[in-house]
Length: 222
Image (cartoon, rainbow, N blue to C red; front, top):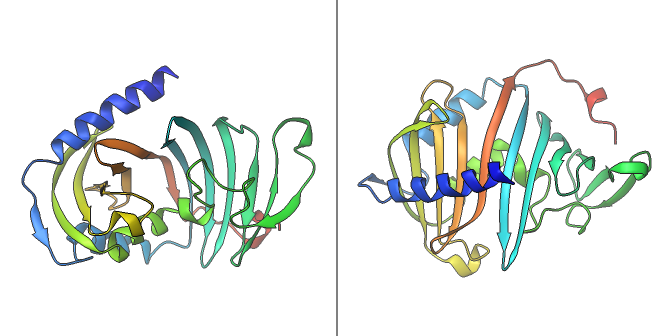
């Protein structure tokens, strides 16, 4: 719990930094987004730990997911700590996931709908919603005012930050603004925060990213 309290305090500091002047850009045209797209074009597969803090009303959810992804649409997750620890699922495209719960039920695999309550997070995010490229794509597809500027060091990594003021929060799950930090070295994101007003309702960190590790379809049993 203490680590997530520190995470929340860091989010406040980051949103304060986001109020500094940034360079206004055309929709979806931030250089950091283009740099990510270029880097991602050379990636066949990756593994990453996604540390996620979600808020919905008075409820909160803290999880760390182990993600594996292979192009074009193979994804596997396992909750390695937090709410639902030991649960996991596989998505291979389409509208179903094959999943299992943690604990003594871990050996029982079921196919359920992509948006089934057992397969989504507190705020209803699905397995593909947590993929790095899909998170970045939200900054390219969500209408609003986009800007970019130096992001300073995030977890010791020099970054560029991209900030999106959402044009129509009602059409975007109530999200009013979005903030993402990209590594200057890898061009992959290291932190992503979405807000409702001043409240961070989604705070994600991308840890232990490994690219092109040699995953195959056998790593995604459905």
